[in-house]
Image (cartoon, rainbow, N blue to C red; front, side, top):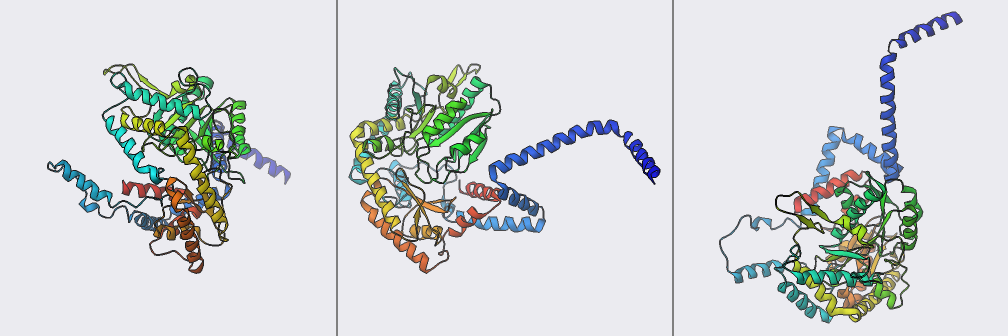
Length: 536
């Protein structure tokens, strides 16, 4: 028996030896393939978690079955059509080609007719329009006049329009002085530019950080780390600039998890991000701890002050316990702050700031070999509307320290009143501890998205959130005189949902709820893209 086994083993070895040259080539390729699969799986698990990875895998397999895939596509189309139902109505009469010449008066009348179809936003929108009260009419008149006066200007041509170049310089200098710069742009290091909004400011900060770290550390496969509460503009930046993005869950206080972020830092990390405050819950991330982390690893650290830039400095002066959030924190390399939010400038104005010129240089694009001449541009846009820069300058000059201080006092007081009013509603809870003027709230007893639908039917336009399911209101000056109206309508809406559970007719609660719970995030992604493709 033993001899038979030895003979069999010898025969097998002889057979396999014939394939040895092939196996010597195949084994390394197989090992490389398995290594790649394991690396991809590990990265996916890190980013999405075990449950989401497993369910996503099952959904991918299910889609391979023709009948299942067709069913999913049909259901997806139903959701898209429901989402688009309002935005597509009336498009049959839209202009599709150039008309015959019309008089100026006729054109204005057509525009006034269309404006009349807009939602009545005064007082009932979360964020959106930040000016309000008795000052709004005069403020709009001022910024509109400033825009009109410089509507023909373009800061791309500095030699032709030095006026708007000065306005931009001064807006940047005044903003940097608010945000921790002890020196002005003329004598110090903090510098920056105006942009079209928070997203462009963020895109530029990410692009500059990427290119700066490539020069400083030779990083050619850049990665950046954000938390779940960080604005989606960073996802856009990651896609635009080919940067690997790691999204880390927030901690129990709904802040950026410093320890969690630290675990993702590696030799390719170029940037970490903190928000002051985060858009979903109005909570300030631990900026000092994140600054120390960035400094210890020698990487860039961007602070998103798009919402807080023109509130937090004044809230601190009013005595609110505002933690450090700006360039006074060591490690902060860039900041974004929107002037068109609480700065009360015309829409389309933001500022991106850098700790020094060495970083900002990487924001610029310079072209030397174009037949059209030498070209250099500071921002994503080449031509820029000088009228918006002039409008922002006019807003900041007219309001001054006293104006912003008084505005902050009013909106901070209103946000505290709203927090107290929500706490008095037993079915609701506040998400975390808001630091500023955003108040997010959810419920363990009723469907919060149904509450949102009913609030919408009463004319309120709030923001639906996920992780956890909740909604928020971003308090502006519009809400100062009607805060009690909001709390009354909220109490009534909660009562209605509690007594009549189930989605209201025409509401979007089922869509929001299904989107949050759907394990296959790829399908949710497809829904969003299909919705946008049909509405713009």
